[in-house]
Each structure stands twice: as structure tokens, then as C-alpha cells.
Length: 165
Image (tube, rainbow, N blue to C red; front, side, top):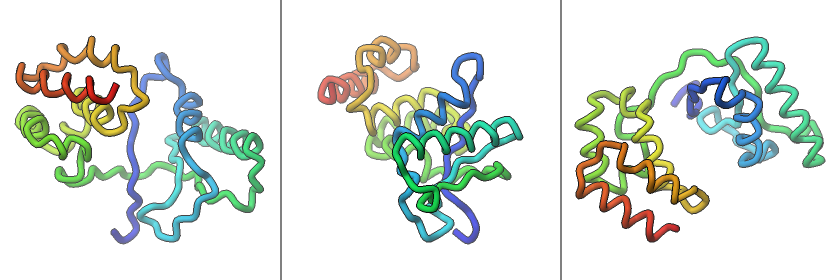
């Protein structure tokens, strides 16, 4: 891996969700005091401008105060976002890899790794198939027909959803 860190890049519309809210979701599911000794799995929040930098620092400070964590124990770095490199195609959408026929269909629709990674449909399916235990399954079932899946794959996803609810 060299000097690369595995990360996700989130494109968001600040009129729909703020950077602050995204950070709140992040801190809710992240342990800022866990130690990762290598660059590949480093704990980090990346920012794109001075405003995001200030917001990220403030949110980290509020988070550690809320959890009563000593600043010296914080392992999460706040760093500028530089070049983002998409992972190889076979690393994209991990949970879809377990559903080969769904993944194959999506790979036929999105011909390169970036298109697949950026696909809202693939991202939502991956999220629900992966960690769907805490998802709103009724909303998912309502939107599923808009994904453009062939009927047999849509029915397969509906059966998975019924098991996870």
C-alpha cells in the first residue's frame, strides 16, 4: 500500500445534508482513540477547504469532550484531502460481491470501477445487503423498483430484505 490510506469519498449536497451532520454520523460510529499503527488503516477525517477544516476540528473537540476522552489519546487525524484514487474494481461494493448475479448485472451497467463506485443504486444495494440490520426496510422496499433491476434480481433483493427486517 505504501503511503495510501483506505478511505471513502462522499459527494454530498450541503443543501440536503451538512458537513457537520456527516461528521456527526462519522463520530457516532467511530472510535477516535483506537490505535492503527499503519498508514493503510489510519483513522482520519479529510477536509477540502478551510471551512471544513475548522468544522472537523470543532466536531472532534466536541466529540472527545462528550466522551470524556483525553486529547492525548485521540488517534484520529484531521487532514487535507489530496488525490483520491478509486480502489480496483474487485474492491468496490464489498457486500455486493456476495450476491454475484446482482454484482454481475451492475458491472454490466457500469463499465468502469469509478462508475460502479459512484452509482447510487450500487451504493444503496451494498449498504442494505451489508449492514442493513439498522436500515429502514420499508423505505428501501418502496424505492427498490426504481433501481432498474431485472425482475428476478429485484425479487431476490426483496427476499433478502424480508429476512433482514
